[in-house]
Length: 216
Image 1 (cartoon, rainbow, N blue to C red):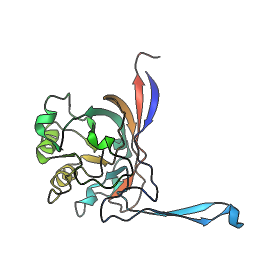
Image 2 (cartoon, rainbow, N blue to C red; image 1 turned 180 degrees about the vertical axis):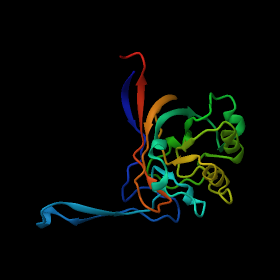
Image 3 (tube, one colour; image 1 turned 90 degrees about the horizontal axis):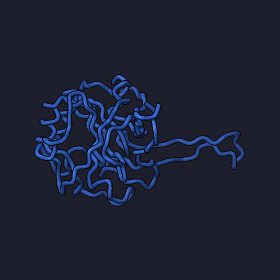
């Protein structure tokens, strides 16, 4: 087995990027500059921990839940199945029942969200998972669920039921994936968060690696 092409499925962090309404904007500032006579360039950054492509820790919705630094890093290095789901509003149980989903799977869902401009205006009508889909994935004992917009719950869905269900059961949530032009299939994936003490989430650099089993 040999790894093939590496596909970056991470949104670029920049000061003009789209963020969830009410979340902090991104600010990147140069505090030391060679051009200004300093010996080196050094920058600082201010942003929310759920900016761009990121993972949610249980602490995000569960008081006393594990923070991102307490989650085993092995959970973020694994084989991932990418499914393209063509729905107008939300992914339901019915949309998933014929997919080859097995116990222990990590799943990334590519939807029409991936066709939206990467830094376009926030779209409240993004595709999300409804509670029936979440319950089905729990029944299948899935371990990771990722989606290609800022939230796995709908914008106008009250109380964040999918977040609360998944995080209470130890399912890892990956949000803000950039899956445009990514084909369905199985990939080796890395989406490691920063090891931030007490953090309820973290930006990640998510990459998919194509697998060529016929190459030795």
